[in-house]
Image 1 (cartoon, rainbow, N blue to C red):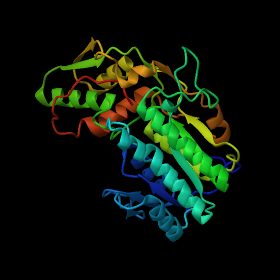
Image 2 (cartoon, rainbow, N blue to C red):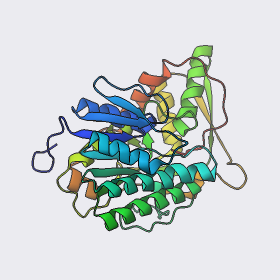
Image 3 (tube, helix red, strand yellow):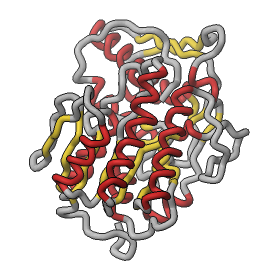
Length: 336
């Protein structure tokens, strides 16, 4: 971080909403390591680093007054929202987590006239697909092809509207395919990891099944993404920049991702590429997508620092070898 674009991070107070999820945990540890005073807002118990605290969000009570109370109590310099729902195919759950919660958070900040910066994690799937080899910049059409993407886009639009009306300091980080330690077992790498780990425990080769979606996506290390969030909380250069794409600018196929993790594991393996289910799969809606991270470099002095092979070795080292033998699962589908 450079002094001309960023203020000091130590003792910066951050209210982190959703710090118990996959990406939220990585954000929490990066903010804490930078010396920030982090308060985690979570509906479930969360393990936090020393010096951090957790406050409970009552899922049965209105969120807006709860958020207002927390902001008024802790007077944060920044509020970071990492909440998101992707894996459960329940439209009401997607809408509640991806659209309604961020709107309620922004409205609570508006009610108080908060001057804290609001950092909201959006998704690359808020955009529509583009032809190979075009990269997605912030001016590309917002035309999501999945219910997940549509609810994430509604959330982004709602908080940007509140921010305009209340003059909130806000930035939306559209995340491109976070991968790393602690991923959901329902994700592409989560399923692959489970199969590899089971084969290692059984002392036999792993047979990996992968749906033939022919997709290429921009896979970014969760630690690099957490660094982008850190920089977003304190950057001096974000005035008038409401949306930033956070990705590597490099594309990899689902096959390369699975093969890379399997190679990193040292487990003998084969990959069976099979036809996707009739009617397609959620990932099939976007066959090619990579980020254009130009604005992130300009406004955050940020770019992805780690290569995909490094990330895959880290995933296996920190998760694969420590797991108990898991149950077998269905083929990996390529969803982030």
